[in-house]
Amino acid sequence: MQNPHNDWQKPSDVTGVILAGGRSTRMGRDKATLEIAGQTLFARTLTMMREVFSRLLIAGDRPDLATDEVPCVPDLYPGSALGGLHGALSAAATPWVFVVPCDLAHPDAGLVRHLLEQRKDCDLVVPRTPQGLEPVFALYHKNCLPLMERMLQRGDYRIYDFYRQVRVRYLDTQGFPAHWRRSLTNLNTPDDVRRLTKEAP
Image 1 (cartoon, rainbow, N blue to C red):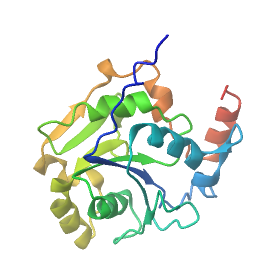
Image 2: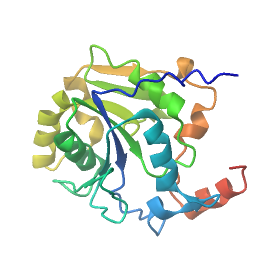
Image 3: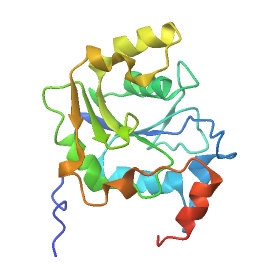
Image 4: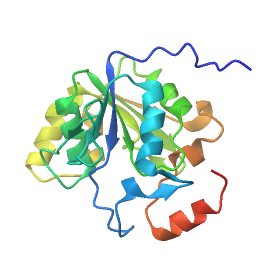
């Protein structure tokens, strides 16, 4: 069967961003370098993002992961996912960024493409699942930057706090690929890793 995404045109107005600046305290080690089925979580994410985007950044001070093709951007306000988003949006040469965490074992390009198709006439596209919002697997426009800046300057790191001030498109799961739950499952603890290694790659 022909792949329906063989004719996918990588968007010129979106930079793909891998969030890799977290401290991984619950895991007890760097999640980006954890291996699942012989491949690091970062490598799995990078492979998927290369399918979708021509421009890529790593959000976080990670020269160990960066290359000339995929540079890293240290956070201007370190210590939170909001700081990573702010740094990525500030550095991106495009009006949009799509952010994804580095701790997804099964990141799915189809789900990313679905979100990208919904970005017209809004500032933010975020999945809304029965478990809640997925703010670090989402699209952000540079229109969000001034609000992020003000929040970070006053020490407010709650990523949802500016949502009511921008045009948000909340995407419920009805149109998602069938395996969206697996695609959005991240690894936070050693128990999560042990459970996953029992599954097929």
